[in-house]
Length: 378
Ligand code: ADP
Image (cartoon, rainbow, N blue to C red):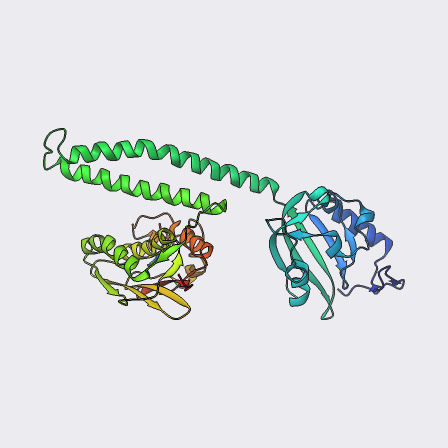
């Protein structure tokens, strides 16, 4: 239904034509805005605030008179995590108005006395007859969520550390049993001991992954840059995974150049990424398949690609593959153990060292996962 044009349009105090609504509608709208538990601010096409609800005022710690008819950019000041004010052109409202599309973002707002309020905001342009007539922002306070995420991360971190100690005792004593330090093992006992050791290894890997995730989410990953020879590192990784490939009769093909220029990066983190991708390729390729580990370089970057002839990833799952705990639907029925944490972790690690991870995959044909790092002179 077309809304009736009001006959008492008035000039807005900030100089733009502002369409007003009847007093009754206005009161209803105000009551509606007041009852919303999230902050709501609307602006006219020039960015001047024409409505702001009580939640927004409370969250921003300002009075109505300090916001109304003022420019949005003056009232709402977003800052980066380090406290620096976000450049005008990178602000969500400017992006929303420039692109004509809603922008959702996690930002921090700078409040009075330099207090910081973390918020999740969505700013959408208001379009009428094809023309932008303003913007509406809806935002909510993330303080409690951040606090609870931190508690969760602290819990995982403490629990993981506490699990490590008994696990290393299990590992040590099982190895002593395996080495015959408590007498010879019977042929029946030997495979049991091996199963215990394999499980201990898996649990150790899981604990390391969880600890790394907590570190990366807390922004606490330490990057130790050194001169890294990608070809040598790749040979080391391949050697580590040769027994696992042989155990599944998988042909491991190395496609490595003999010499490439060194890169300046963290070798432990690069190794973690490549090892994770290679381990997945072996894990998700059935017996008798082929996994190729290739390394190539240009004058700008080095790129590892791990190509397998495995189960592949269904198209419908591909957009979610880097999400935490996500496992593709074709794998769930295949009884291949996993947590859905590896790719989430390595994507984050890659980004934190300036690299990138991406993939292509066809179900029942295979996958290619690649990781590239910019080549900065060592
Ligand atoms: P995990 O392997 O522990 O489940 P990852 O985060 O490493 O966790 O991988 C997430 C999901 O991505 C896997 O569960 C699997 O469904 C899919 N996946 C990853 N690598 C491959 C691959 N090379 N081939 C097929 N599917 C893969």
